[in-house]
Length: 126
Image (cartoon, rainbow, N blue to C red; front, top):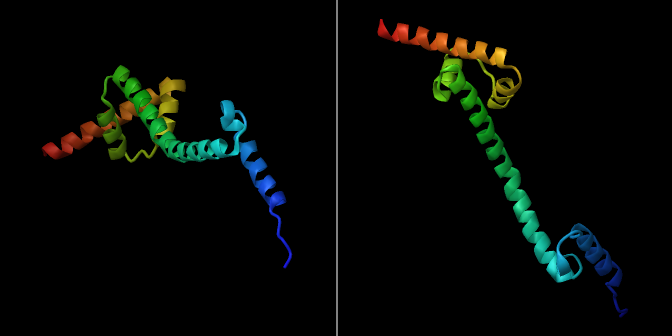
């Protein structure tokens, strides 16, 4: 029976992994085993942080909208509730963008939210 050699496949596999580990500090980019361990850890971090990124951006948008709402004289929760009552379906990303770049449009949304909250309170008091 012929002897099977794996050197080509092994070299290819190791070179591919070391290429991904390029730029890592010290032997983590040069020695196969250390590079493999570091790369596996890095992939775990990357997977986790792809999901955390969504959470972080949502927090940022809420902070921006809240700051713009406070300067317009309304709280964030009342603003969002007023928009919901007025059937305005704009997500937080767009609201944050409006708050930063187009203050006039954002002020109109604030007025719309305030007026819809007043209408709801008037209907509830009857």
